[in-house]
Length: 388
Image (cartoon, rainbow, N blue to C red; front, side):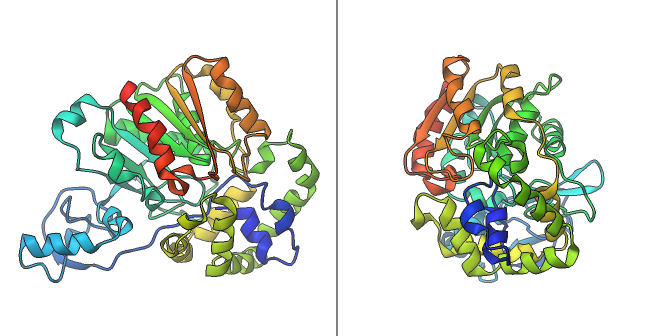
């Protein structure tokens, strides 16, 4: 989550106390459920690792079944004992983007057909370093009335992490647009957190797109990294240090050593606690969601590329071109994109300037409102969705 904060908390620079409140991303990963495979023919696009007994079989023509399932009753009992994260993983699918990148995604199947027909589908887009399981506390509620999709952006979760890839905000926005065109194929409400919000905003601002029905921004980031927010005095003060960190992270040996320390449980727990308002939401499951897949090939390269890469388009430039319905949900205890910072101040001024924008400030909530205080998010989100 707080990538630079995490780096500094374990590095010899000892800059955590200064930078921990200046970053604007997350550092989440997904874990893998235990499973057993039985070969079966299938034509669905499932993730080659995470298959689903709800959707059939995977690209490796296999289906995951429970080893104790001799009847539907036994299967239901075992499914009932799974955590929400494990249930989500069982529904992972795979989509080939541009014919060369494997993108992991989720789609619910819980909504009655008549409700699916009357409501737009939803696409959930995580923040930097996050993945689909970060929506663990939202999918069930949303799926009662909507078809819910969620995606792992290129470089994160179970999606490909191509070696040497140069990540940009524009790349993720194009991925979202292509996913709408090729997979969902219906006008969709985009719901994003942090840099996921910014990617959704960039996608929605594309003058050629026709499949975005509305956008929900949860503590939208000002850029892919903090170099975008140069008009914040806090960033100006530490900008030379940010450039120094960029230089250090581009040294493979240094970056690898820091990354190994960042992945330690206690360091991750401390970082999470610094960005969540509700500390009870920082449970062991969340720590494990973050920790395990950080060992995947390409994870270090993605980490370095995004922290040191170009910040991307500024939301201040993008928002005036948006005429779609926009819902802003903002945690008032966000240390990375604080409501009194340049990005927060700009977004908080929009409802008085644009009729299509609604803003709700969430009290006692941090940078990731949907997982921090999902009850407060659903209280504002569901009526807004119904109004569409």
